[in-house]
Amino acid sequence: MAILVLHGPNLNLLGTRQPEIYGATTLAQINEDLGKLAADRGHKLECFQSNHEGALVDRIQAARSDGTRFIIINPAAYTHTSVAIRDALAAVDLPFIEVHLSNIHRREAFRHHSYMSELAVGVICGLGPAGYRYALDQACEHLARPQA
Ligand code: DQA
Image 1: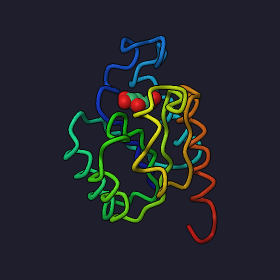
Image 2: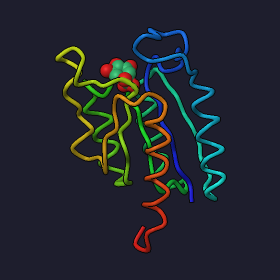
Image 3: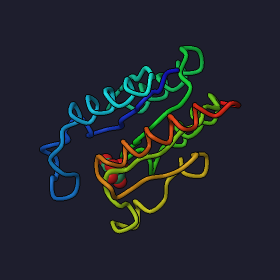
């Protein structure tokens, strides 16, 4: 069963982007780590990053018919602005976990609101790259349930 990991704008710069906030791990390292963990659990995993809202909406829409069973998404700045990504997630009606590397609730007020959280199975923030691993673990548990 396939798990889709979506990364929003500027996450391609992880490793060099404000390391005091986002850490030193690169996106390639995060994706490689998740790929190995998923394979160990017998799941296919695909990662997709884009700096463009429409590209993320298109990828979410495609998930409706490409075998995706679960989405892990860090919408990055679009978390706080994008009704379009929220609507796409609602439209495909796939379970998803929202991940943020930083604790958005300890940061500027404009980062405290997420358009996605209300629809998510769960939200993980402030735990750095480990947050993605915890999300993957939960995704695998979710997919192992008989009704999933
Ligand atoms: C982020 C938090 C967002 O507020 C920010 O715009 C990002 C990354 C995080 O992972 O901590 O780009 O989603």
